[in-house]
Length: 368
Image 1 (cartoon, rainbow, N blue to C red):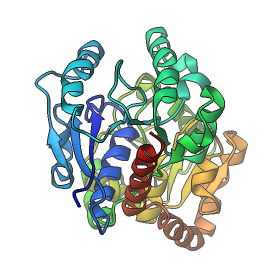
Image 2 (cartoon, rainbow, N blue to C red):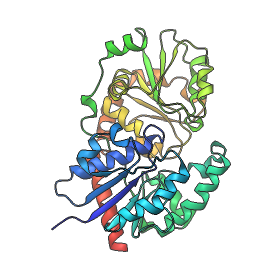
Image 3 (cartoon, one colour):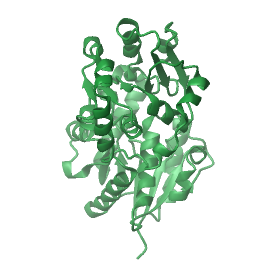
Image 4 (cartoon, rainbow, N blue to C red):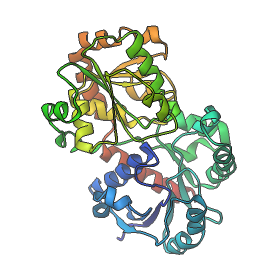
């Protein structure tokens, strides 16, 4: 029997521009391909450049790329209404992965909502972006056969905010591929390449968006974590709060920007801790990446993070006094926390994510 076809809309996913949602959707689709029996026949409509950034995607699904660029929202929306709709005609199901569905969308469809940060922190969004999300997300969610979300926290938010029936909102957790720990740059190479010295390092892999709260770590380095040999390594692209990081005069803060995946993994593997003071996360994939690679986690207690980390890391309120002795605590409990992190990471594999996505697709057809 031929598996039913699904068209996955990733036209919104500009490589390197949309944060963790890029890895989230790609890893789901890789997990879908890992399932022992082919349950779905996915075709992925991708923004130009996405396959070059994720060549493994082409091996897991049929990929189609439009002639238009997606860097203009208006151009992308027009393309979804015309080009994407024409490609949807023969699909049993369409999956819109960017939180909104186009007008006159092919139905039934699945909608992925990554988070509702614009409702919690509207000050971090432009007036135009807030208006766009406030207008389209509620209608898109109510018309969806199923809304897929990355965590129980986001599930509760969607049900409460938009009145979507609870049976139509399902969690598809982030999944980490089993080969992640195979692609790791050696610590000695990284110390030389990035001039990290011989002392301990802590790592924060995050785009410098305001809600990532880099300023908190800069304050900790200034007032509490004063070891002259300690290095705070910041990786990730530039966001709206980049100026805050750039203004830091602390020579112990290393701003590396986007680094190759093997270097990112190597930095986590050699770190004393992965520090994650984010104010808002729909899931927080670096938490699981750090656990997989053996870095103890220190994170905030905001939004979904207590649910994701559980007792496998230090989950602390965003108060300097609460974090002041965290590095000492991690050093004392390192063996325990690394082991707990490895166990916790087993709940968040790409295979488990793919299986959850397949269950969402099946429910969507069942409810349609």
